[in-house]
Image (tube, rainbow, N blue to C red; front, side):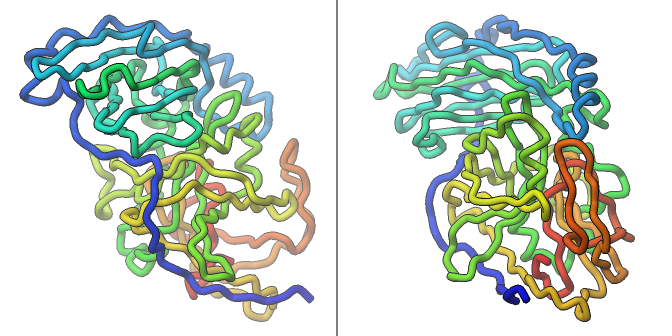
Length: 401
């Protein structure tokens, strides 16, 4: 008989770096520089155009493929693109615009992203919803970085470099991922793309899950052939330490080719403020980068270890229960997830779960799972969509099953 172990959950108490976004406005948005920089954004630099029909056909011929974006090659740096402008106070501003005609959204992947202390980098789309400011505290030791998804076909970039550190920034991108899936509801298969029958986690259904939801994150997964969405949860360990272990599904790493775990991004707190769907997209608390620790295809689990998480993210490590006693099957179950990369939702099966008694043939690259290896549930409240994959299944004691 397997060991039976029940783990309680833990709150995080450390402080360190992640993909820290400090907020604020780009120089051209700020009142003191708005007039000076007006009209100085250079003409857009053309990126290759994605053939959406070709990409969708390719997805259809690869069962299980669940991308929403595909890569195009480019060569953009502070030296060969955009324009520099010196402000009256001596600081410099770099402005650049890139466009892929017909794109639903753009993700910029940087080979080199190094900012000196005091520099601030921003990105935004036509809707002027700003990502950033990214600073020296946002940079990774590897020098790599990722920004997006920026809605629409054009991304605007601005870098403020103080006079004291002039010329010390290094920004180079040779790849931009272009969102092409026009079958999505509102664009780049993320904000607003969950089906209407989904339930926001801050609706009454989620009232008793306000602590556990803090451990759930949306995953923006980067592959050599594009990007996809999954869900998952921080998970407690038996040593009662705060190692940032993260549980998701094995099959998430299969929905594209050659997963680049260094650039996988984990978006915590990506949710509505209340039960209503917001008009403006909420700003998540993101962690960029992870390493794969272990996985098993038959039971469809994958354990990752994230880069350090700042204490002010207020995350939660969900507990778990590996009791295999079939006489104590939970009477109801709950999922907390990000369908199609949308804001955080909650789904409930009010009936008793069952253990699937026979083998499961998932088809194609997903293989076969043995009998008695999976729970079977049917949700009564909310649904489950692509992008929900990897989310935890909770028992009534609020532990991952």
